[in-house]
Image (cartoon, rainbow, N blue to C red; front, side):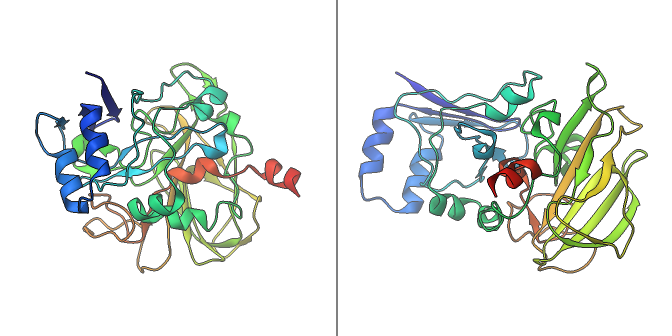
Length: 306
């Protein structure tokens, strides 16, 4: 009997008896019935979760970095996830090689855009910007570790599970291995206005920019090169990534917001979110899943396309 296994940092799912699943999908079953049959504790399948359920990411097959993106698996999954009939899913390894990191593939089939939007409201946000925004670093080769693993990904548990990671960390220097650069340039992903610059985490700063389309980006763990009120253009160098004083690592911590909520981006007591699964992010309610940033073209790639 063959099994399909989906894995993430804190959510393991085994789907057994493929023939059962195939027969089930052929039936005219309601969405609720499918969810119950696929994910209930039965002989056909087993859910194992030893911690609080937070977003788990299944990274889909892509031939290039621009196609490397994730989708959220909710605690109450729907029936639209497409699984191959016989291949086994696998988690992406971390080979300390950026080309391998960003071109890694898994056995999960690529979900249609319309279906993915239904599963992850953040997806529609990214589809509207994927050809307009640019990647916030000069090159994806600057990334020395997989942003989808080891707690760097959005939704990873923080502080012993009492908090949930609200951004994605693009590691550019790893102190343990002494790989990468300590002063990678940070580029504005789109046009906007600097609304805040302040001390952030362990000796680093954060920059908040309200973009021309109304969305907001927080660029964290950097040293700012801009000030409040500055108008920035897409591709402009706004900061450099610097090592934090806690671990000695250097990373760009990126948070994205749709811009349709008010108040500070950090909100300790907020429990309601519009576009991501409910969790204790301690952020504003219009928080967006930022993992699709890896799909964006770099500044040079976009210029070459013109």
